[in-house]
Image (cartoon, rainbow, N blue to C red):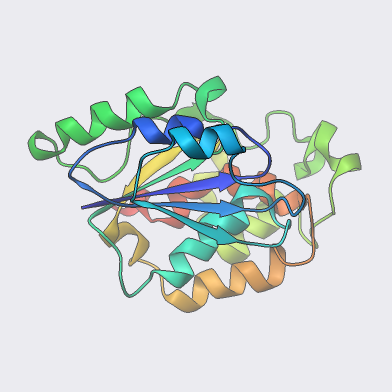
Length: 220
């Protein structure tokens, strides 16, 4: 079975009604905008998907906080596969067609993660190991990228010196065993130390470049 986890702020998410498949267990929408309804009245009339679960979260930590919260809340009740997506994943080449296509292929593939990643250097656009153009607009972390990655993800320097696998846009799928490759306390620590009480933390941009390694896919 599959869970689809949606990190929503104000995006129109009526595309979720297209996600109709027997292998989907839940579509969990974490909503972070206090002033907007999940759907307009007209949209509520057209939405016909009883697998959608709505949860409210404070507007902190970008999508990283949302995804880590799911890992914490569902750690002891995970399905086989989890898709993590933005409220509007389409600009990043993701969306209902991609998700449904992967779901249809699941019986015939060894699914440990999606192929929705690019390879890039950690420090592209990150002078001095910080977030470059984003730095002045973010809530700074106590660490540069190297220090942050070494503290929370992996202290293997070889990873930082070579091309990294990055889920740009933070839309990806992962298997249950990959989430369980970390202790629940590790997800809790990340939430508490980096993604609480910060609307746009610098660590959120670090995290976007680290999901592949958080789930220990590099160790397979």
